[in-house]
Length: 274
Image (cartoon, rainbow, N blue to C red; front, top):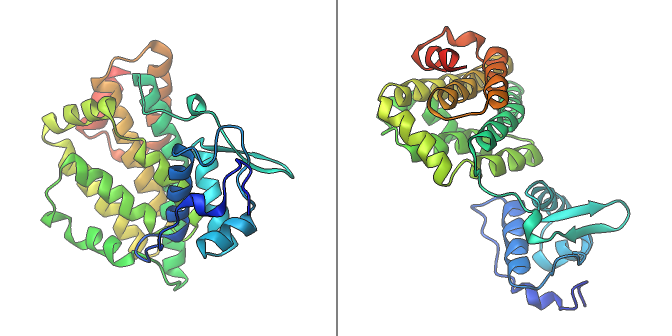
């Protein structure tokens, strides 16, 4: 069977999918590899959902979730009634390049991560079978055992998001999380870790989120995650050069989402800088 780019199904060089990683994530990764290898060129249409499901040996729902990931991350665009088309590389999102990009990303994370943990908590209360719940439980009861490094911080968010029962939302939130890396983010995190107190405070925030999830308290889980991310925004504002408009936006995010922080040191520094 010919693809829209002129290649055959075998051009995808499919390998057996691993069960340890969500199928939609593996499909998305394989499609990105195919795009980067030139199997699907910019402007060309991807095969239909039915065709991709057959080639990968997965359900159409897994393919749809994979395509959702690719659209969100800028690899493809959807055309109503025509399918998904590969975008040009320069239109794909980059790692944050300027301080304002960090605020953009944190604002987007504030729109997704609190909802993701709330859905997980609701599913726990309803007795649903939740993937990765044992890892969430370990955050709730064992954070005192963790060595809180910059990598640990991302891993804790990743565990909490991977447990979300809405896979499309989880995929979107995880893609945003993966963009929370690179030189600019490393610089922001290093300044936080130089403080010494913030890492332990943030570890406590993660524990509070996990406890709320395990207790099935959706509203509290959402609030605690939002407060944590607002604390991160405040730290960015306190330690990063922002233009006046970005500083006002950061202040608004802290004011809306950080009310329950009780103005600990990291919020107080952030507010003083706003």
